[in-house]
Image (tube, rainbow, N blue to C red; front, side, top):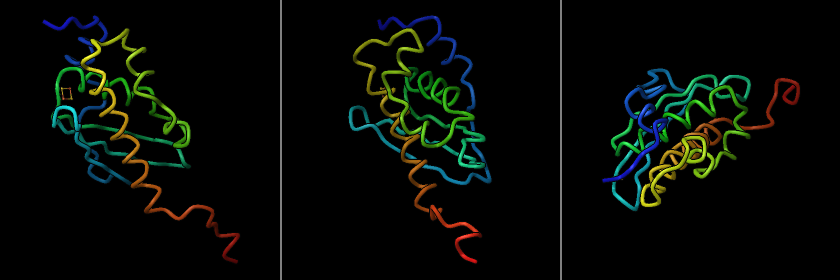
Length: 133
Ligand code: FES
């Protein structure tokens, strides 16, 4: 049986930011090539920061825990900083994961990046009222 840290179990049993944002500015669903599981990330962006984030996971305990930790880490961050978060950092913050579960953290971070990209693709950058006038 896989051994998880107390913190992983806590985030699995009480996931932070679990659910859906109905009026999200962007969302993305991603699947893991390794296992076929899926998750969705919803974002609210304000002043180029992640004002709110929620997730739905159709993955395993490790995915729920890493997604929960990921949302805690990036909430409030500028989107450029949120993009730099790595799956390894999430695993470290949880006190480690069994190696065969690393891809579950990868799924959490990949879905976040895909949601940020969806936001950026829908929002032209560098266009301000000043540059138009
Ligand atoms: Fe699929 Fe963890 S085994 S996300």
